[in-house]
Picture 1 (tube, rainbow, N blue to C red):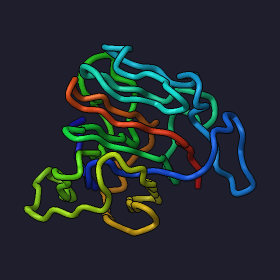
Picture 2 (picture 1 turned 90 degrees about the horizontal axis):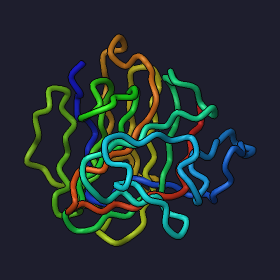
Picture 3 (picture 1 turned 180 degrees about the vertical axis):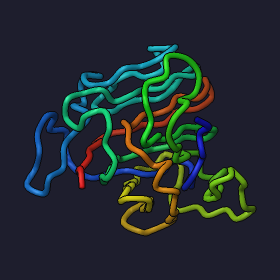
Length: 203
């Protein structure tokens, strides 16, 4: 299945707020997916060194690789959910968060949808299902500055928030948005992106 790149916005984008309690559901139903000390619950492809844990952060930096969540917290076929993460981008950042995807041993994921994470100067709104990009550029955050990314998937509607502001909303054919896991991308040696406080809430 061809990846449809959607809802991509802003270098250093998307993130979240709470602490690092792994395997710990809070009172609002949020489940931590990253413990801040290891890649427990995640599987990396192609170039394992492209994802490293450093000082409580998940660092994406290196040759092409994808980090798939395969832990027991959410299952392998999650459809409706909210996902939050704290994110920091750097100049030349090129990364992404995949939703409704599945493990692909080599190359880019062959299922799901990618929400782009680019450096602030290349913040392009890729909101068209066919991959067409508008010339509109919106900068919601700056490089080297933490921000909160909030992705909401409900039936066939995907909503993206940055620091609690809705920046994109997109409707997808419900037959195509058919469940899966999430993944993070390391694109190349020039790209560096930090993640922390990654958590999810099934709906």
